Image 1 (cartoon, rainbow, N blue to C red):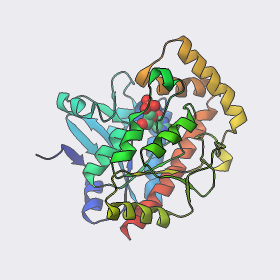
Image 2 (cartoon, helix red, strand yellow):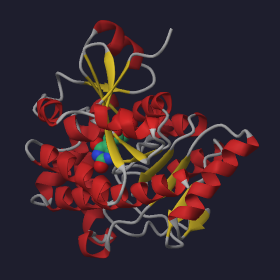
Image 3 (cartoon, helix red, strand yellow):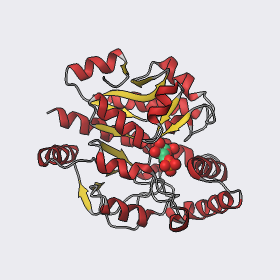
Length: 304
Ligand code: PSU
C-alpha cells in the first residue's frame, strides 16, 4: 500500500531526474491571505522558485489524493475556496480528509509530511505556527513544532509568526531538538520585523552550509528537520515598535470574541491586515518570496 500521491508532470520529471524541488504549502493560500492577493502570491512564489533554478511543488489535498504540484487551474480553484470549505490540515486530520475525499489545505506540519512522502527535502513558507500567547492556560501549541522534531524536511520561514509567544516557541523547539538556524544574522527574525531581539541558537550564512547540515543529520540518523529563520528584506519590514501595538489590539479582540483553536491565526492575520491598511499583507508576501529564493538555493545545494 502506497500513499495516494499525484505529482504534476513537472514535479514528477524533476524528482525522477534528481533536480532541485521546493515544496510550498496551501494553508497560506486558503486561510492566510485574502482573495485575490492569495492567488497572485501563490503564482509569484512558484515563479520565484523557478527563476532561482528549482521546481515548485505546491501541495494540497483534493479528491482523495495528495497533489504535489498544482496546475494553474487547481491553484485558482483553491485560492477561491472559502476558508470554511477547505479543511486546515495538520498531522491529526490529513488521513481523514483524504479518506473522505474532501478538499484540504496543508499547514506547515501537513506539508512536511507530504513533502517527505514525495521525496522533497526543502519547503518554503511564511512563518511557522508555534506557542500561542496564553498557552499556559489554553495549551494551544501548533503541531508544526512536533512535526519539525520528527520529519526530515528543511523549512525556510521568517521565523514563527509574531502573533505568537516567540520566547516560548523557541524554548519548545530547543526541547524538541530542532535546529533553529538564523540566516545571515545573529538574532532570530520576527516575521514582519527583521529582529525579535532574541539571539538565535545557530547562525548560518550560506545555502551550502544549510544543505550540509541537513545531510549530516541524516548521516547521524537523527530524525526531524531544520528550521531556517530567514529575516524579511529590509525594505519590506514593519519595525517591531510599529507592529507590536497592532498585534496587541488584534489579540485582545480575538480574546473578547472567544476565537479559539484553528481560527486564531487566520483571525489575527486578517485583523492585522485591516488595521495596517494592507501593509502587513504586502510584507507577508515579500517575506514568502524571499524564503522561496533561499529555499531554491538550498534545494540546489542539496542536489550537489
Ligand atoms: N505562513 C504565513 N501565513 C500562514 C501560514 C504560514 O505567512 O497562514 C500558516 C501555515 O500553514 C502554518 C499555520 O502551519 O499558518 C499555523 O497555524 P496555527 O497557528 O493554527 O498552527
